[in-house]
Image (cartoon, rainbow, N blue to C red; front, side, top):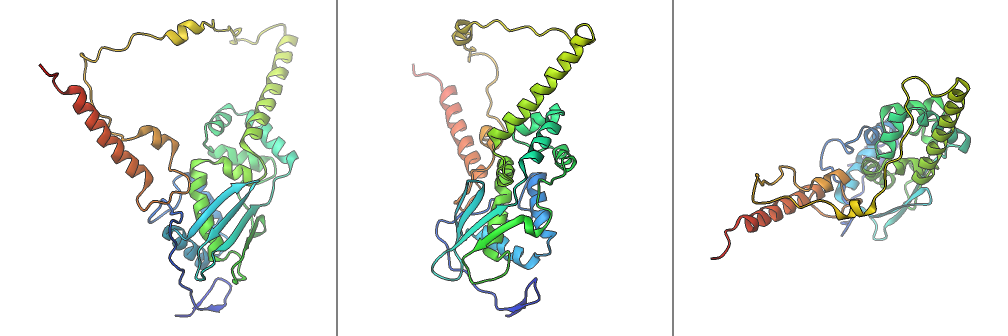
Length: 298
């Protein structure tokens, strides 16, 4: 049935061809991202009044219509299976933040150790967005012109549903690695960490000079002591615990390391990755526990 799109144009919805081995969104219903910054990415796109395009893109992402998605050289390249046999080519870039503003962001973040530590650990604290604002820039796009997109499909709308499908998959990848968003804004993780490290060192040097000018260490600050380095002690380790004593139980959280790392990027399976690996982990743990507690043969 023909419909009106977000640009007040009449169109007949097309039906995409089935995509084999496509990238499936981890989300099956409801919100796409689990982190606040992933959700902010989606909220930003929705604020541009592109609801029908985004809705169809969300459906494409959950059906696995995106066949390939690569983030390299600070841009996104993808192929999406549409209604024609030949998949469409999609590219997405974000407007770069100029280097002077990046350096100012780095100085502001370096001045807040809590923000810097959480960023380096792979999380964007809300205060980080304030640092960007104080530097006169925005981490997330402010307007549609901040998004530079292209698609080989005949639809002249921007974004088309193929671009929108990639938008949603990106939200899930930002959950796992927020520095992908930094990369699209023109700053790689290694460079950013080095930049805030340099800014932090400069601030420490300034504080040290000021302290020396005041006649020594500031009140409440003690001299740092180096830890003794003994490689033999480190590698020798201690005695293994005696497994004949104490309680041995299976953890209630299956595959905790996998959960800490997050969903596998660009998952292509029909079932949720973390749920699948958790079930396998619990099954293996039960088998291992059974073998450990099995009475020895006489």
